[in-house]
Amino acid sequence: MLTVYIADDEDIVRQGLKKIINWKELGFEVCGEANNGLTAYNDIGTLNPDLVLLDIQMPKLQGLDLAGQLREDGFTGRIIILSGYSEFKYAQAAIKCHVDFYLTKPIEEEDLYKAVMNIRQILQKKKLHTEHLSYYQEKAKRKILEEMIRNERKSLASFEYSLGDLNLQTDLYQILIIGALESSSGPFADFCSHLNIPITSNYIEQLKIESLEVILLKGEFIIGRFYAFKDRHTNEKNTSYFINAGNVVTGINDIYYSYHEALAVHERRFFFEEQSFIADSDDLPAPSDLKVMFTAEHSRQFGQSFYEHIKLHKVRESKHQIQELQAKLLNSGNSVEFIKSFLTGMYLYIVHAFQKDYGGNGLDFLTNAEIIQQIHNYDVLKDILSFISNEITRMIGAISNFSSEHIVDDIIEYIKHHYSEDIKLKTLAPKFGYNGSYLGKIFNKNAGMSFNDYLHSIRTEKAKGLLLDEGYKVYEVSQKVGYKNVDYFHLKFKSYNGCTPNEFRSKRNIHVD
Image: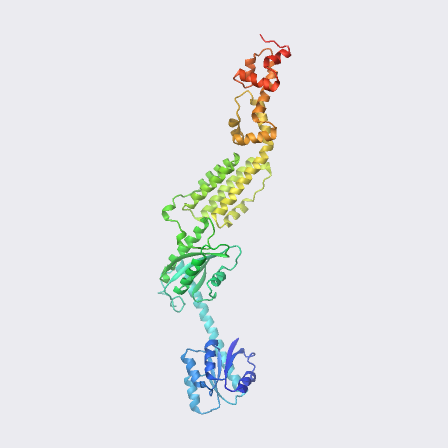
């Protein structure tokens, strides 16, 4: 809707002008009115209407003087002078003030209607031209900025628009990359709100570069305001978005460097222990600190190592290795995408090995595609490693529950076939994927006695059968059931049977020469 301002010292004339034609139907709305030239001058400077109706004779400031002053101030709106004088000299003066129409009172509806229609046509053409020009200038500006950020354009020498035309001429520039956290869908609007500037501000440009939300700060004023905001809020938590800041540069041709600094900070954010609200080059490691380069083969090796921890039920060791891996990745020179692929491959190795060996334990896992997507969606390395660590702990827990129901039966079966050998819990435990202490607890819980008690009970029971055979001497029986020391055999046999081996034979009338 176009706007019209009415200035006349007579109230009845002003009211009549509002009603003499249907302004709304012609696409106008009355934005203000005044009964003197000075008030009109102040209002017009503030409201900047598209059309002004000025009475030639007004107190404080005459209509023609007002029109002249407005033009000197750069007012580009259209002006219609309303005059009770028909003399040529007044019309001639109006022409000098670039007045569009000079209408004499009393104002005829048809004359005003024709004048307004003519002006509307001029305004619409101008608006269309301005919008058309603005559209192509905006496209040109975005193209230039994108090319400069990508370092595809070195200068504006061959371009038809100047920096001034594109509102890019200033003393300082800075690139920011902003991103939304889960609670926000409009980080740019939030950012502008925090800096107390409108999203249409001339101090900033908003672009999309390779799916990243990029902001160009233009000029010392807005950059100063950003740094004041940064000083107050750098360590703020629970924000709806985050900011990665490049360095301040002094020329439009150098925004490429500011962008790549911001991009490096953006990628480094992946390694942060906690998500900081605002990060800049101070958060980047020194290049000399980036020493380790991982390969796909390392992914498999780490997967094997973690899987050994799972089989041996080593929760603490697996968590310690996760911390070591995090430190190594922190100082690696690998890209974020490679590290995500690296960890995905490592985790998939662990899952596939686990499913192969313990597939019947009922533990559910995501599909390969879901695992790849989930790890890819994490924004922070710590979260990926936390996910993998929790999964390893879950697998160890599942094996413990699964194994404790079956492992004792396997050990008992093993003892029945190997009781004559030198069996010790600490040497037997690795055969079943456990450490000795943990296996001892499982055995005691499920068998109702300690491992050694059960072993002695089996050996002494087997010894009773051999003692019934007159062909074996006691020391021979001792060796056959796994006791190298015959005195120790006597001690254990009596402990479990209430008599010595010889007393056992005597009771059964067995005599050995």
